[in-house]
Amino acid sequence: MSRRLTFLLVSTLVILLAAPAFGNSQGPPWTRIDSDRILVEEGCTCHGAGGSPSSEIILSISGVPRVYETGETYPMTISLAHQSYNSGGYMIWDYADGNFTPGDGSKYVAESNGALSHDSVGNDWVIDWTAPAEDAGDIHFSLAGNVVDGSGAPDAGDHWTILTFTVNAPDTATADADVSLRTISVGDYESLFGQKSAEEIEAEKQAEIANDYFVQGNLYFWTTLSILIVAAVIQGEFYERRFGGGPPHLDMRLALPQGIRRGAVTLGLAIGFGWAIDTALPWGYTLVIGMCMLWGIFGVYRTVVQARAEELPMDMV
Image (cartoon, rainbow, N blue to C red; front, side, top):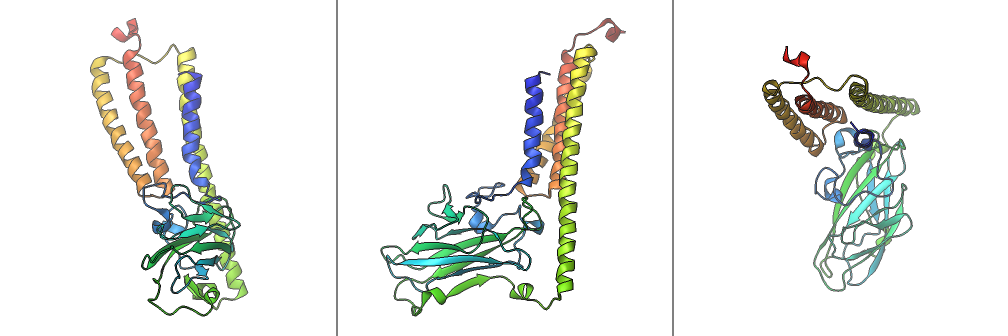
């Protein structure tokens, strides 16, 4: 095996296994990485426990008019609140009916037709929304937000939720005297202002920190172990070719059925690996399936190289 191929295999594995450890601190992608579904509507399954929305986060937006006036610009403020953390990110979209203008810490989302997201981890983003120049009927908004625990990884310590709301068409509702006082939010305020003592809050925080260390420790341990196993296999191939005279010969009558069996198993594992990624299976299961798939690929490779190896006199005995 050439040095270039060895380096390519190891680098690819490192990138694939290390990818879950990094979040989108400069703004999320327009669609989820595991599908073509829009993130602002579906949420992000890589954040939070089980990839599910959390009621622990209070996601709110103020300055939302009850009814819009055509061509009018409305300043809005997007805020996040959580019992333990106070920073994160967001994405908002009005389905391209009006126009957003990003403020400090915000930017347009690529390929989104006008959606906004955070440009860096923060809170209390101020943005402008300009209503359409003509009556476009009721306008629907979708807002996704998440708070992060500061670990740098999209893990169970993060929390996200989605808020959907509608601004009525002109002359269909009574406008607020002061639009800036109107706030729309989603979340469980009891979790934010619950009757918990300082000792209980600290105990929960310490338990969460311990759990984060456990989760991250497992992630890096098993990732490192997988890389070492792959490196050991590649090293074995190298020494066998360099000092052992190459792989032993395998008769074609044995190689053919063996290759078919290994190929079928590898194909099944590849399908399972794709399914694990598509369904956002927990990383531990995905890692096991991925390692088994790599082992299957290596088995097919060994069958091929042994079948093509030169037949020696001892192989004929």
